[in-house]
Image (cartoon, rainbow, N blue to C red; front, side):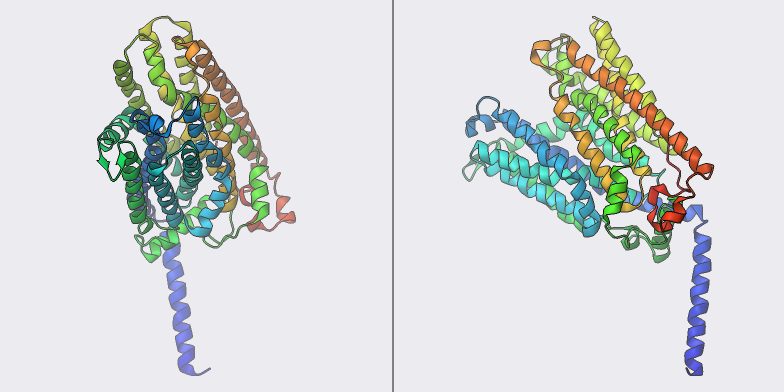
Length: 495
């Protein structure tokens, strides 16, 4: 080696050492870390919120099309329309887990917009169906395309935010549900669909244009999002090179030994990671709890107008009276999400929330006063809605590395969404107007959730204490440190 080459190597080593020293200093820079978080908020959250809102509109606009003549034009009879609604959830539930695996392989910033493009195309094609069979086929495909979105968003956000910064971001995304219940169905769904149903062109009259236009809007928005959403912190163009390094580094540090020195970009799929996710006590308990949580959440969303109408109000008044409790739920979701991240706890807030919701259902069952029972709907909304994002963030916080989290989140969303099948049968017409059976079913689900969450908290306290006392150190002798994931002795579960 000549002297000039030696000098260049020496300079390169010096520059590398200096760069490492600078980055070591950055890892202790809270202002820079805060700046990275704000940049992620600005460049990621708006797109996630919009895509989720479009998903909600595209799955529910069939109700608007029904009002504008879909049933008559397709000659649907009996319960065929209800069948078309139900088949949506078959593939929606079954594809959650494999969809989460694909997210990293494709890249989250590409995969989520591609899903939106796919369901936008399917939604657009629904305007051209001519038969019951065609409608069922489109609804099946729509469920398949939308199935990976909910769990995918949770997984995607966990790739950019630290464990105890995640809850507030999930709250922002999830609050689209109560907000749409308050305003979205009427303003974005109802009014837009009403205007589109007036279009008569090209042999398509009325309701097909609801699907044509709203599906096309989704495709266009998703195409734009495809070019703006990053796959991982290391590929985020809105971050500088040093910020990209710190964004990835802080997530590794946050996992407390649950991952190796490699980041999520280098992790490879493995079946042991899948097995560890499925056999995790938190996955099992939190999936069951999510199922129970979604029974009152879904039934409230579906049947609140009917519950209020049963208090003696007209159809129009009942619709208007659904706005205040849903808007309260929107505010409480945001507030509880913020508090949860600040105190770094999930389970205790679920216990508080469902206790409040239980009070609301007791008011429905114990009182004959319309005013008291309407007040009870506020307790239900404020107590139940925050629990859904809380349980999702709770499991995400307690699983690592990436593919273990992807599998566990997929299992949770798949099992949890089965609560929709129960919720659709909680409030039956022959139980109107008091709906005692429906209220009792939901109160029972709440009580079981309180028991399940309490058991989960006791398990976590026991396991964290065992790790603190060094009772899990034997795992170092059996496996490589980088393969331990959430089982790493230094990893602590979030309460």
